[in-house]
Image (cartoon, rainbow, N blue to C red):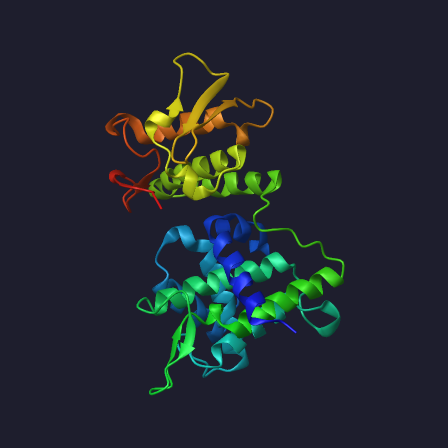
Length: 309
């Protein structure tokens, strides 16, 4: 029996992983192969997903969303991807079951991380197609019988996810905390963010994003603490490549770190990451205020819009 309190705690855990959901999705994206078939379901799924999710940095999310739409259209050609009803949480659970249910029962047997990635991608989908809805609830209006909020936050989906995690654990699958980012996760995230084939805007945004996550990982900080760092927080000594100093004064107590260069594993080298960040910003950015800045669609650094939560 899964209690309401357990569902509430589960939703809090789900909210807490959104800050590094890119890493989780990148680690399970191979569970969602691109469908090159020419049937109408595949074509329409690609068309409707791309028409609504225009942010190119969400390409992995779109891949999962397309798989979700394609799956349901092949089951029912009249299924409406944009319709949100009492049935929608069941549709979400059905697709996750298809991906993560036991192979012996005819499902794909994917890991629990794939279920988490799916839920996150579908949260983006339903937030996008219904931008004015609440993102923290799921309820039905008494008068109109209209369902409000996010179906991925419904008690039905939460109970399903809790049950799935327990089932996976009983089957011997090790359930890794979404907060425990491994070295392999960081390597994959490095390759995802620093993709030389990406556009200028995507490359610059990737450098900024990876630097923030790397510092959070190395200094064991939450991402909202890292994005509050300012230029004055970083002490880069001219000619010194052995280490960089970082000071965090956003907390009640000031903490200082000395981050050393890592020549054995350049992907997680903080000195290289900070140098990349400096090159990305160039001479046009004033060395004051928040350290992590936003990038607009054309690739320009916008110092007036820092990434501060």
